[in-house]
Length: 326
Image (cartoon, rainbow, N blue to C red):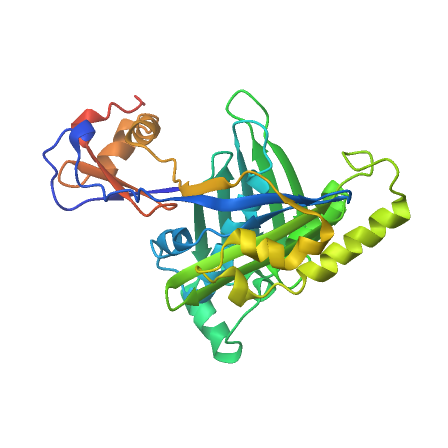
């Protein structure tokens, strides 16, 4: 999502040499997502712990803390779901409601590049906080819909599922989506808090897979149901303190939960700061505007485009942008 505004100071550099853009954080968390499954049981899952990356992503935005907490949960959720993609693409979440947070967007690519945008009415958020110090996702978003989308690139159609928001927390809303749209059991727990070390987030997502989906054929449906219920019971013991503790490894955390259930951890996946804006892309967008609109956008000969995902500003000289003739 982009905003176009005028810049008061003239920038004499050509667009491709524009050095006024803030540096993009070169931050990668090598083991941000750890996939796992329980041997001989119809259970697979992902543990997401972005660590300091959460703080880097959230603090680039000036939303109230209650909104950033919700955004951190959304980032952890899309990181978990994108890690299951078996093609180049991205997984995104969009929540749109009539509450203080009218729009929440978060997405993650198959390679773990994360970004988000939240549109909030800060006055409404402040009023809500007067009576509710820790508002739920439902109180922040209000009534509306939540959509999950898979994008495999420009040459393919976007696969999207949309459901009405149902539940108090974002975890419950996501679980409702999977129960109604994907029609299989999915357990979701999301975390995000502002710790002494900065913002931290996390997610534990588990899916109950079909009995013929890699699980031994000699396991009965009843045994599979019991194994799923046991896994869920163990997962509910997970605390925010554990997930958000940088000194506790993901391997140790999973071992605490499932070591007696045949835990097998997969290859960890990296997460990174991943806004996909670029000068070339934004220049192409500007080229589609009519000449009169471009003249109106420019101030002192310079047009500024602000990316709402990473909060970066890109500056273009008006005479470098051709525009579209009327």
